[in-house]
Image 1 (tube, one colour):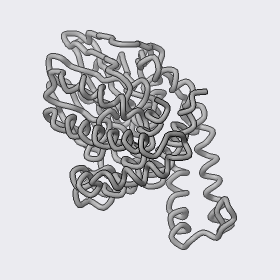
Image 2 (image 1 turned 120 degrees about the horizontal axis):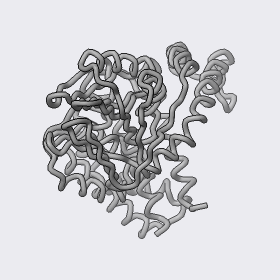
Image 3 (image 1 turned 60 degrees about the vertical axis):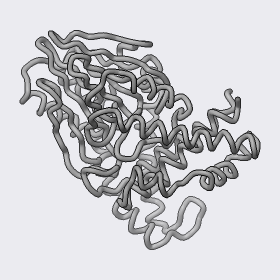
Image 4 (image 1 turned 180 degrees about the vertical axis):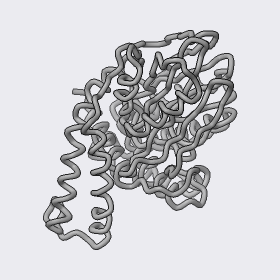
Length: 368
């Protein structure tokens, strides 16, 4: 086993837990979304931004690309009901069939609607980078097992008034559980009826599809948010769907491969791009945000590298390195740059992105 794997698993657990428990709806222009927004990017190209699921889990952006013969969809979001709403919208735009669905990466908020699309469009081809295809096949079955178990654990905690360690829960925790359990049950009902669908087409570096007078390039630029992030590029329109390699206004850097993400974003930055659809958040114009995120990564990765050399490597030094990096870097300035004065954005930046970024960078660097 690679000695960095335990840290990566820990980071993944932190990512999942924080996304489930800390996402609270605030406004459409924050890390949380409370309404469904549709944006026309070009003739026959649409982006759909979804409101958060009832359990607070964010839903990835979906892009619809319509050619003269058929349709390609990028990411199927999280809630089956949201995927059905998207399909109803697509059928208002065109009578052409959805022939292709691309998953930018394996995370559940981008893939759980796959089964809905497969049921509605017989012959659908679901495409993912080869690593992502493998991860979806491996991770998705466990999700359906863990989700109801976690809800049951919450219910037991509320009924007993004690947490897993046997300690009495606070009034605030009791309030959170009282609100969370019914919301999770709503989501659970949808997942119970869902037939999961994994990608049936994998690619390694690049796949080009012609939808009928509309070329779509599906590419792997390198590791970043996961080992198999795909980007989808429309060369004629200069539009890029970036998945969670980019998220706005606060990047989702709670895990993954930040050291390698720097190089991946550098490849993205030299592409002929005018419009970017991030994995979450509003549509972006130009490349300024790519450079902004790259600068953040370089700053934090350099600080982590410095402190590993100074303090030492190995998992036993993680906490010490985290504390040292927090002192080396101007966290307040970075928080202001990405989160502004928004309280929820700031909490997400501090508790999810920065902690996860430092941990993931440490996992990549300490074994060198």
